[in-house]
Image 1 (tube, rainbow, N blue to C red):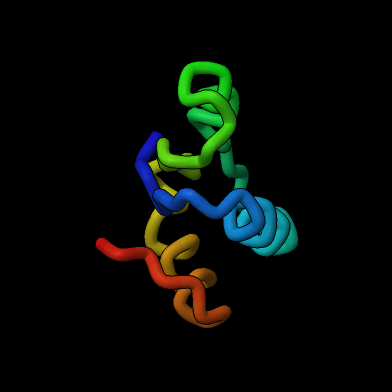
Image 2: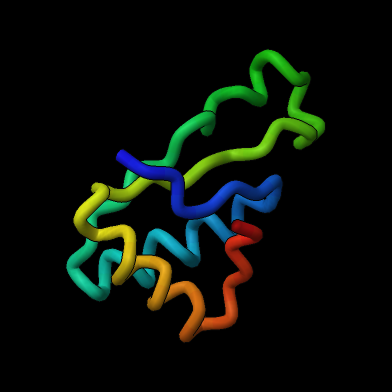
Length: 71
């Protein structure tokens, strides 16, 4: 698994996951339950992971939809 996206905004993770699912790319959100440790204030970023062989296509989908990757 490779990191595609890292953000504090849970809506971006949901949107990106839906876009990837529509393209047939499996994505796995990580650090979703870290809010238990941080007290639900949203300071710890969440990550969206994809398979290494899907990384190039997933980056293209994010770019085409205006989602900044910050890589």
